[in-house]
Image 1 (cartoon, rainbow over the protein chains, first blue to last red):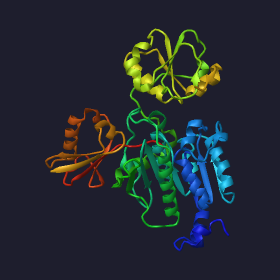
Image 2 (image 1 turned 120 degrees about the horizontal axis):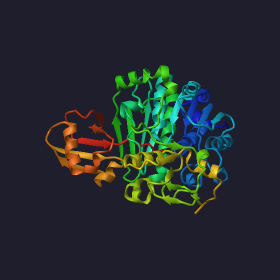
Image 3 (image 1 turned 45 degrees about the vertical axis):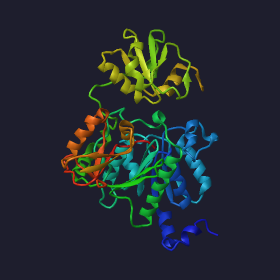
Image 4 (image 1 turned 135 degrees about the vertical axis):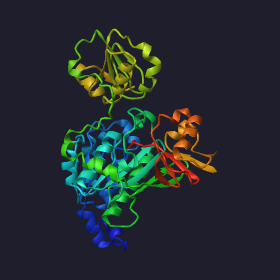
Length: 361
Length: 77
């Protein structure tokens, strides 16, 4: 009995359809909550070449929803851990893991090698990067996004359909929309949305009707309400993206700010005694650090606790990756606290360079 | 004209409801938003698109249908 017999006996798929799947090349950006179910179903379906790009490593809090991973995956790069699991699920397909960050420098070359791009990312910067690069490389993007109990699915840049910028032309102001580690998420939600994304990929490859192009499918897991909104293509947005082509590699997708933010590298942290640290992560985030002269003030509470910061001492603000700490420094600079620096690389950089003790709570 | 307004994502947290009916005379989307911002001042600094009758429309669109939705961008994944 062949591996794909249940596809082949479906009259609308058949051996021809299965052959189309085996010839397809799909790149999944992000092997997290959305990426895991997408990858699982696409590997099971026999997509011939599956690319996985993710620079993050597996943490225990991922296991609540990132179903390709297990306890043995903790500490391993997600793209590599996913590849390892998927190779067992389906040894007949080619899986390429890229344990690196998607950047304006590498994205166009990478996209050129694939037919379809899946957006399984968790931040606006990368979503806009994917969108713009896909328009320039002429590839469809199967989009999914979640917030607490609600999810969205669409297919952008498919057969002259709209792109993400036709829906949301510009990213929101930095810090105005929280991510999963800050607000939480029902674990099954990315499973549902990611599976729907996998479904759209299969529909595109099998050349089925009713691909979600020009439509944003919205689902609420609590109310079970579904809403499908129509998106109009904006020629002006496509023109803007096409105009980026010549200097695309120099583009910045960090959410822009008017004030330039002072940053510092961990390698430059030598005066431990005359420095105060502010940890702007949420209290539940791990690892907790054994660091003297450190106060923890979650970013959303910074305004109320600004008085805890001594304006006369050099202040190093840090978070998990160096993104929220930049927002914090920007905020403090606007409140005339100029002796503040955002730590590049976040907690990982701090632990590495100071060789301080980190512990799980 | 009675409008049925749906709030998605974090907008529902601002308004403390996912759906409500608002009485509104036939004007533009941006004028409706002025009414909503008056009722929910914390909506003002949020980014979102507006859909009329399940189609995303621009802020200067004339309101002629009963179904309105306010849709913020989601980034989670």
